[in-house]
Every structure is written in structure tokens, then in C-alpha cells.
Length: 338
Ligand SMILES: [Zn+2]
Figure 1: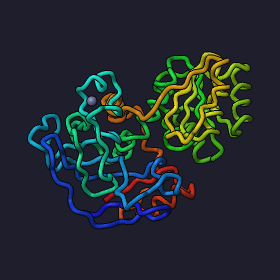
Figure 2: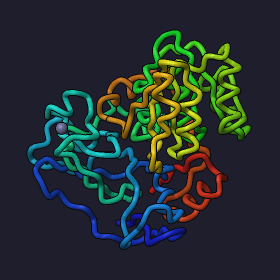
Figure 3: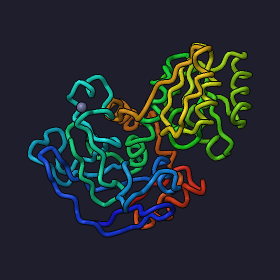
Figure 4: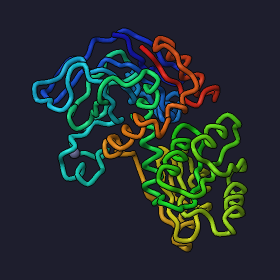
């Protein structure tokens, strides 16, 4: 098969690799229908995170089950399936508590920007779409693999509920999905922080009621202006830098909560914006499996269309260009087809 392998900064190659095989009875092999590049993949692409050796890359996929181990019971050969960016058994105490990302039996993948993927813990990870979904739904089903569930997790972590005022820091795919999640959870007012007209347009179509173009202290001040000087009930932090976390904490009202899901590259939490204002910080890598059934239902019903975050589609063989386009902000998110 062919797959993407990252060698180092600005060096992702499309290479031939050995086909994955069933290694444990709980494994499945999935033939990729679509995969994509994640904002978090760019940390390595930009040299911010190390690449000690050539490494298969990618953790988002939708595909068709090609083979299952003998213990796999819930998905069958031929099913169209989606799974989260980590596998989980979905039976242990941590999974039952809804934190499948932290499953002690969980695993990652040996690269999902690939024609074939070995999915460990298949029963606890994969969800099959009923019937044969329309091709037009594939991007939105793919978005459930990470960004939509991550935006959802930001909103859940921040306590978004009916009537909430929400501010969303970050206008990448996750931030945009956070806007959509807030709308679905009944937020009354959703302030998207974005300077890019194309992203503002997606944010508005996902339910943003206000757009703030300022950043940092000025951005937080604008959120206070828009909320009668109080700040937002819930703030979704979808970037992961010290500046964005600080901006998020400053945008929350006293007693508010920041849901943070941007992979944090923050050495010290700016606690001066937390303690004296009773502002909380909660979140982490999204437990995709916890949200997958609900959100897949919303996609199949046509209620949500998170696939709108993909604004570039390329064949997998052009994966290097997929990374370059996102790195240079020519694309919000690139969908890859084998
Ligand atoms: Zn578990």
C-alpha cells in the first residue's frame, strides 16, 4: 500500500509500505475512503515537535472494513466505519466514565494517511454507519474522527448549555466545529474570534452570532464589550498557545469555564487570570468514542455539516502539498482520497 511518512520539518513523503495485517483478534483492517491532515500534525511539520525517525502520520479516517480479527463482533467486513484518533476498549472503568481517549488499553495508529489502516480495539473504537451513506456525507463523517468531536469536547468541557454566551478562540477546523457544537448545545450567543473572511463565513454558517477580529488583550476586551463588561459564560480554547490560552481566560466571565482542546504548548498556566476570578480550565484530548454515536446521527440526519471545514481535497499521493497548503494557511483543512 501507499502511505504518508514524515521525515522531518517540511518533509512528508508518499511512500510504499507493507500492508497492515491482523495481529490481535480484536484488530480490524480498514480500507481508507478518506483521510485528512490535522492542525496537530503541523506541530511536527513545522519543527515545533520532534521527528526522531521517519514516522507514518495521520490519525483521522473514514473507511470500509476489509478484514476483522476473530474476536471482533460489532463491525463487519464491508461496513463504512469511522473511529477516533485513539483506539479504546470502551469497556473499562475509564471508558465507562466517558474518557475513552485515556483508556489504559488504548492505542494510536501506525499512520492513517494511508490506503489501509490497522485499527486495534476495533469493537471499542469503530462505529459503523447504517446502510450506505451518500458520498456527499463522507467529509462530515470524516470530520467526526477528530475535529468535530474535539470542538464538541471543548463545548462540553466549558459547560455550554441552553442559553449560554460562548466565545471561541481559534478559527481553525476545531474552532469552527466548536461554534457548531455550541449551536447544537443551545448557546444563545456565539462569539467567533477570527480575522479571516473565509473562516468567518464558515463560522457564521455554523451559528456564530458575532465575529471579533481583534486578538490578545484587545480581543478579550471586545468580548467583554459584547457581554456587558462581564465576559462569556463559556470559552472554547482551540489553539493551544500561551497567548490563546491567556486570551481565553481573560474572555471568561467571573466563575466561567474555559474548555481547552488545542494541543497545549504552554509551559506555565496564566493562573493570574483564573484564581481571583474563579475561572476554571477543563479539557484535554477529546473522547471521540463518547460522542460518536450522537454526532454520527446528527450528520446522517443532515442536522450538522462539519465537513464544511474541508476547503481543499487532494489525492493521497499529493500529501506533501496538503501539508504545505495548511502550513501556509491556503487551506483550513485538507481532505485526502486514496
Ligand atoms: Zn477503556
